[in-house]
Structure formats: structure tokens, C-alpha cells
Image 1 (cartoon, rainbow, N blue to C red):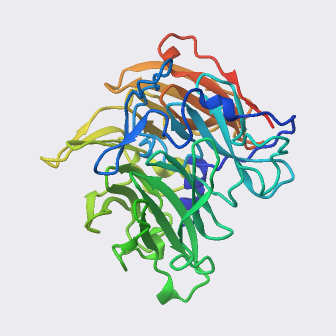
Image 2: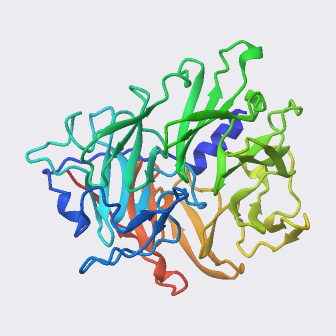
Amino acid sequence: MKKTIILFCALFSFLLAACDKAPENVGAEFGNAPQNSGAGIVTDASGSDKLESTGAANHEPYALNFSPGDKSQCTCFSGLLETPEGYYMPHRIEGKGDPFIYFCPRGGDTFRPLCSKPNCKHDDENCNAWVGWMFFGDLGYYNGELYAVDYHELNVIKMNPDGTDHRVAASIAGYVDEEKYSNVCIFHHGKMYIFCNASYDLPLEEQVDRLMVLDLADGSHKELAAGYFQTESHMYPDSFCGDKVYMNRRNPENGDSDSREYSLIEVDAVTGEVDTVLPNHVSGLYVTDSTLYYYEPDLTSFGFKDKVENPGFREYDVESGTVKDCGLPAEGATWASYDEEYIYAGTPSRNNHRDQTIYFLSRDYELLDRLELTDGIGICDFTSDRIYFWDYYGESITHYIDKSKIGTGELELIPIKMAR
């Protein structure tokens, strides 16, 4: 299990950073968007956020690859949230315990605190950018409002997209026990999923993980698949699609923690039903109604003992239940992520986590480009128009590349600034 957690941490890391510059006003970054308008985002009768033009003069919202209310299938544990106006992310100021919400307008190269208060130093609880203690992907979007989790008070906070008007949307104190569980909250499709992993310090009979779901529309909550998740499985989501969440689950009947005997399960947040979709570990899952796209890695590179003789890209046909082998046109790749346009694959880091090769493939598995990363820089997130990178040693977002350059042979790391 320790190796499972190490593998998870290696792929998804919370972005913590440091900077100390003069305060700047971020209010003007939202252009013509009125407060609490959603800035070109409307909600249909089902409660799903959709992208539409507001019709306002000089304001046409950027067309995202997916709704800002839905979690990208490329990364589940990302700290970034993308809207048509720009990018939000938690960022820890040096010397301060809690992260603050930072914002970068689309096309910009600087993140600033999400606060327009005059003379605010952006370093205490009076700042609009302060929510409390946030973790992993604890930023969400629903019905034109920004959401975050405050683990200090165990509250879900909602606010306007410009950071004003903080309100408590719901309390999770009644059903999240921090002494018994380590909790990860992820927003998707009008809901907040709470992955409660039981502590190993509990008696063995109490080491059962829980999956809770909170409905953002009315604050109601329920437990999914109660009693199904034994602690040995330790829940970490691999992808979300509509009302379903997908997870690699270590088979509890296998007592060998070094084994790769995993299965991919699907949990329906509406019915609570759990189905086993595939009998193996997958990387970079991308789900449609008809097909599951994924990469099957050889986990021996991460210290597991069972070897996959033919690692590579796969396509699972939902109707027939058959799997198509799509090869491996990315030499040495051990992980992959998919979005609507590309497949991203990478080798294990080399030279004490300083070097890594990243491959860029079309959705037809054609190798389009590659990028050699050095100096401890690695991928941290994917958006509709950018790929963000971070410093492995400093744990700070540092660069991005323009996705429109993929395939040109001219990929360039562009510096990102964190300003106060």
C-alpha cells in the first residue's frame, strides 16, 4: 500500500509556492463580466454549467473543451480550475499556513490573489482570496459561483468569481471525521465528492473507507456503496464522466501489497451502484458513452512485482466488452493522460527527479511532438489552451506551454509569475 501511495503522490502533487511582491488589484481582470454572472456561463434545467455567449459588447467567452463545472478527465487532483475568463489555483504564500486563491486572466502570465480590496496585503483571513485550509483539487464551479473547502471549519464556501461575497454553502462537519479519515474533496458536475480513507490507527474492523457525495444544488448528502470500500483499496479517483466516478481499486482479497492486481470500478453517484469495468490497472482514463480509452502501464517501474508483457494504449468497447490494443508509439512511457485533443505520455523521471521526456500524441496515437524536461521541472496541469509545469524541488508553478504549438517542433517553456 505504501507503494500505491507513493505512485499516487508522484503523479499528482498539490501546488505550494512562495512570492513577495507589492499588492495589485485583480478586480479589473474580469473585464465586462458583472458580479455573480458566471461571465458567459449559464445553467440549464438539469443544473449543468454550459458555455454560451453573453451577447455583451466586446465580450465573447473563450470556448473551453469542457464545462468549468466538470472536472477535466486529464487530471483529477489538479489544483487549477479553468473558466472562460482564466485560471484559478490555490497558492501558499511564504510564511503563511493557509493557501490563498490566485487568479490569472486568459492570455496572461501572472497569477495574483483573487482580491480587489483596497490596501489589502493578501496575507490574512480578511483577504477575499483567503478561504481557510484547502487541499488538492478543492476548487470548484457551479451555477455561476466559485466553490472551495475550508478544512479548518469543515465548511464548503461559495463566492462570486471575483472572490467577493463569501458564504457557507454547506457544512461537512457532521459526516467527515478528521480523526478517523484522511479526506479529499473534489468538485464535479454539480456535486462534491468526499473520499474518506480510514486511518490505519483504527481497529481493523473499523478500517473501511467511505465515499460521500454532496449535492451543491440543495446541500443534501449521501454515502455511496456503503461498506464496499475496504481500507486496502484506498480510494483515489482516476476520472469523472457525468454522474459517474472511476477508480483503480486494489483487489482486497489479494493480501500482497506489492502486487498489481487491481481492477477499474465505476460508481454511479445517482444510483450508488458499483460495477467492475476492467480487471486491470489503468492510467490516464478517458471516458465516453461508447468507449473507455486508457493506457495499461507496466508497474514494475514503480516497484510492483507483476510485469505487464505488452504495455500500451487500449480502447475498451462498452457494448461488446472487447479491448483493442493500440500499441505504444511513445518509447519508455510509464504514464499517460488524455484530453479532448491530445494524449500526453511520459517516462519516469531521471537524474534524481530532474529530467523527464514528455510525448504528445494525437487521439489517433500518432506521435506529434516531444519535450525534454530538465532542472526538476515536471507537468502539473492541463487546460484547454495550456499545459502548466512546476518545480519539483521548489513545489511552485513555474512555466507553461502553448498547446497550439504542439506538432510544430517549437514547444517553448514560458515563465509564469506569482505576484502579490
